[in-house]
Length: 230
Image (cartoon, rainbow, N blue to C red; front, side, top):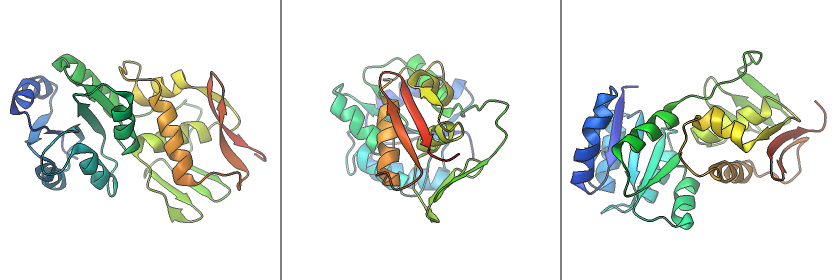
């Protein structure tokens, strides 16, 4: 994958401001001024990350994000002029990895890009790349999840959260540990993004107690991948 960053925003001035800061970090900036162009540029350039404005002509950012998530786990940072929690949650529920609210500084955007691109780090003692439980198979090398033999469409961050929890069965993992290991210690976003990702994982796996494993909430601390028979 090339080191391309796609900026999709109908405000050309924002693109002009961000472009030199992002290129200084060694990336090539590609831009789109509407949602349809964003999809075309995504398919053509296969960018490493997308900065995606929510309010765009022809197709809004949420719809673009949904279409990309049908076939790719490319990291997406949503850009919005609104600060309401509902808009942030809507973006995250569409599969975005992070969000940033206008107005913002170019330095903050670059820091967010670096944090999102940082890969999850696992303890040195954990050398396995394939995890299997009843009906569940998670391959971190290929970023794939199967349930009852069928592929489950989880985002990159969702897979990393599930991996971190399931690789340490019956161990409580705090929200802070999940944020530090998966989003990075310099993550600027809302800690509740962990809760949003957990909610989406549970929904996509249709968890309702039918397996010998489950994702349990540990109130005021974090989460645990509970396994009845390890």
